[in-house]
Structure formats: C-alpha cells, structure tokens
Length: 158
Image (cartoon, rainbow, N blue to C red; front, side, top):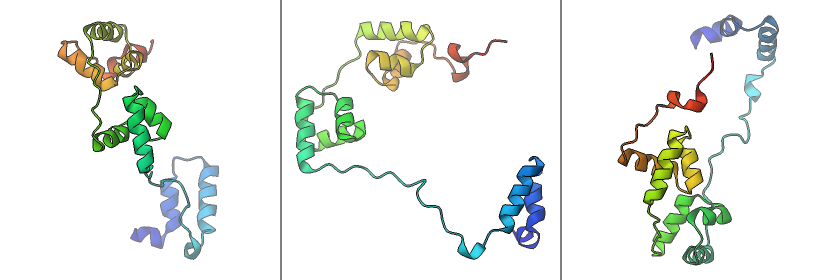
C-alpha cells in the first residue's frame, strides 16, 4: 500500500500490464480524474436479502393450505417464501407433516434415469423429490455415483 501512495501510476501500470494499451490508458485517465475526497459508496448491489414476514393470518392460511393437500413447494411459491420457511411455520403451529416415502418403483426408476446419464437433480425433478433424496436413495441401493467430471453430458468430444 505504501508504494501505491508514492507511485500510483507505476502500480496501476503493473496491474494492467497484460491489458491492451487502450485499456491501460483509460484506467490511468480514470485514476487521474478521481477525486478521493468525494468518492461515494455504490448504492444498491449486494443488499442482504430480508426474509418475508408472514402475518398470523397468513400462517393460518398456510397451515390450512397444507392440510388441504397443497405441497410445501406450492405453498412456498404462493407465499413467496422458501420451502424450509414453510416447514418451519407449519412445525411452529403444530401441523403434522406428510412424508411421502420414496417407493421401490420410484427408486428403480431413479436408478434407471441416473444410469442413462441424468443428474441426481434432474432425476429428482422428474420424480417430484429433491436431488438429495435421490442421492440418498441411490447410495442406499449401492449405486456407483459419478464424479462431477464423469457426467456423460459434460464430456467433450475430441
């Protein structure tokens, strides 16, 4: 940092040494035109996401919707919240969660689809479950899992 204060153009030239000359020139001109006293932080950009708060009435609607047969995913989309937030609200008000077990025929289909080259995420989308559910089922059934670089759809042809 000390060298930057003494000779900023030399430091900038070193930083942009692999750039084309016009890029370096623009960077030097921009640096010369900077007024360090009036530099303002950028507005917007990386604002942290705030969780949407549900009113007590919304939580009741959420619970009624779930008990009427809506899935956690459908309710998450309807209320514009994450699916885990839906589950948290339902647990907080004492709603008994439905668990759909991964049936044997679904596991067989998952093994077949994975063997055809689909990712665990894509298999999960097709079967209506999460990718981690598929991954766990495949591991429990001793399916050899591919490494990410072994994915058949990602191989390049030489």
